[in-house]
Length: 432
Picture (tube, rainbow, N blue to C red):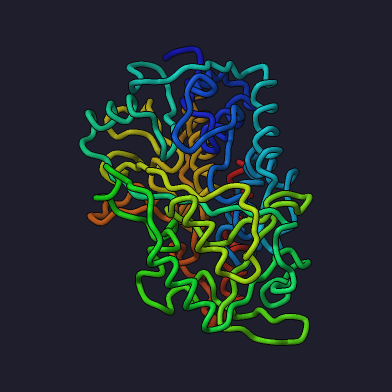
């Protein structure tokens, strides 16, 4: 066994894994190809770069599974959640962050830790010795991806897409209003209402717009969690207004209801940039400006960033990985992040955090501990290792958690009972 743990990839999963291990006195060599080389979706030299939304989703511990997962991770000492909490921007009940400050915070913490050595180079093959964590994410470089495929066969792919960002001053507020769904929050969203005619014109624009050619991507599957808005529109004329553009719970200051509503979420704390919520897209840049300008509030919008689509790759984990994210054929090699089949920023960081937990116990000769399925951590760990002929990426959700022991028809009470049980289990693990 080498005298250090090698972590390949300094994204969310790799960052949490390296941080957890180093804080427990285990030397870590963190291998990251930036800034010498970048994936198609990355542009910053910093670690933990967010390439799609700036939202880490709901912060509701007792009513949302992702909110509960964040609290589990806080208790376990997650660097990613710490960075999110310290660099958040107003977003109602969600934990949204200033993406530049968020990644800069993570980078500074990792680079300044005495037990972490940063190696700026591309890993091109799976390691042959020592304990190693592959946390290269859904955009694993071609050389390493080919080595993984040689070892395990053809990987699985799906599309991921990011939404456009517009400047605050270019939004026409005479056709928009500020407010949060059901009044929950502090007015963190700008709402762009559409009547029936405007909505249908927008849908028609999406359906007729020219898309970027995906070449080798186009025969692969598209994961619903990152479905481009134009693909959603093609599934039915009313799909968007029952989904991304649903008007439910949104009224203007006069109490008016609307046919459809596009929400804009703050991209930074200053509120100078706003993200088009749920509008991930693969349209050509000129087409994005044309189509989104159909929405009255965005008629003269200045686009600070256009949406892009890129490839995500994940393993057929039930065939390859154990519940602790180690390889079945070599338990000194672990995978972490979206490449394992967990889907989402928080879920990816969670897998890295858990790998750090499991590796520390192995390193120090402690008995292994499995996270119980009553926790979100445990349920996702079990999901990626459970045989499944139709294995696909999974987000945190209450559906994969067992129901509470006490039966109740009250959905809110049920979720609270599940959350309290999960946090009690995490507290017990931390205590042990």
